[in-house]
Amino acid sequence: MSVQELEKIFQAKIDDEVKIEPKDWMPEKYRQNLIRQVSQHAHSEIVGMLPEGNWITRAPSLKRKAILLAKVQDEAGHGLYLYSATETLGVTREQTINELHSGKAKYSSIFNYPTLTWADIGAIGWLVDGAAILNQVMLTRTSYGPYARAMVRICKEESFHQRQGFEILLVLSRGSKEQRAMCQDAVDRWWWPSLMMFGPHDSDSTHSDQSMKWKIKRKSNDELRQNFVDMIAEQVKVLGMTLPDPQLTWNVKKEHYDFGEINWEEFWNVVKGNGPCNKQRLDARKKAWQDGEWVREAAAVYAEKRRARQQVAA
Ligand code: BYC
Image (cartoon, rainbow, N blue to C red; front, side, top):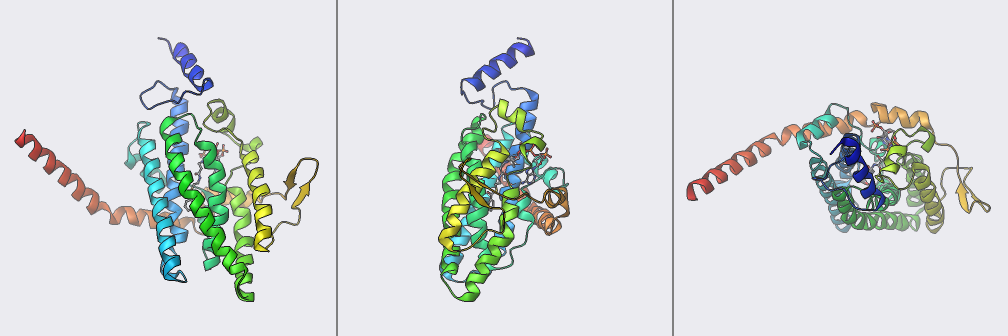
């Protein structure tokens, strides 16, 4: 069959909502685009453990510590499913991880901001996981089977994450004057970076057009961002807090909230590696990879020994 014929069959499957599976023929650009997005998603889950991990030893009670530990472990699990999904596209785990360590592969800009107070853990759950869920619910219907299936479980866990974050802030918002101030300060610092998670405006998005045609993405960056603003602008009222945007107003005609412009210079600066914690995050990941070398070696030697024993027995 010619490439044109294969492409026709491929596009017909996409149009008919048939999932693309690892052994199916796919255009090379589809494969490369997915390797890029799924691996960056995996890196985000893994690097995303660091800002919250910073508070495990300082959580204010045993209960809070247990909840946070479970959440951070969930993120590790998400990273592992997504690394496996990336491997189904024909790249090795080592290649993917090398691209993170060399700075070639990106991860979400949000994880390059510091967690300064306990309220930041609440803000991450509520805003960061909240933004992630909107994007990931869309991705449960993405056209590549292994990515879509990984998202189903991830979304279930993310909704627990968002609730636990909101509950941390709710308790603080009903606490002392200092606790309320801490809560507002965290919301102020995490609001704009959370909006940046959805990526550049549609007009500046390099991959959106093609990714929409292939149904890798089903909603645009701006559309998802608008959904997020509409949701959070209502939820913040329950906390009795405010969002740091004087332009945030309900637009009766559009039936959406209007909001101010994102600082795109800050966004690209963070994406290019110059955010407040980029170096710290990458250094931590590289160190973890080096420290784990003996475990990988031991596991490989053990697997080889087991294989040899089974061969003798057979
Ligand atoms: N940060 O053409 P565009 C979690 C890059 S973790 C950095 O619109 P696309 C959690 C983009 O990669 C879950 N880079 O791209 C974990 C591209 O550059 P390249 C996080 C960004 O792919 C722990 C360029 O800008 N979620 O929930 O069509 C604790 C142009 O953009 C960002 C995901 O990873 C950014 N924010 O759309 C708590 C979702 N935005 O690759 C929570 C999976 C854009 O050409 N990813 N760029 O060098 C996606 O859905 C899509 O990749 C995006 C961007 C919507 C993010």
